[in-house]
Length: 121
Image (cartoon, rainbow, N blue to C red):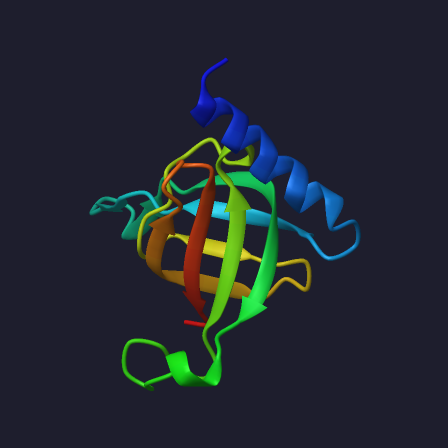
């Protein structure tokens, strides 16, 4: 087991150790929309991934109401707990069935923890 694997396991264990703070969420990987002229319908190939996240608020000094809005949040997801690489415009649905759109994606240097800037669409 390499050092990176140790960090990934540690990130997952830390999130789990928070006990009742992490929320079960659904990560939705947005697929391409396809228009079918014969039926006039648009279908999408979205894929849902159940996982766990910890939500946090931005500090006041980070809010510029341009890149980071006052209503934006942070979502932390252990890399081991998500089977896809997060990208901008994918979505998260929290435990209260609120949908959040991903606006920015960061990962820690060990590739163990995803840090997502999320916003209500």
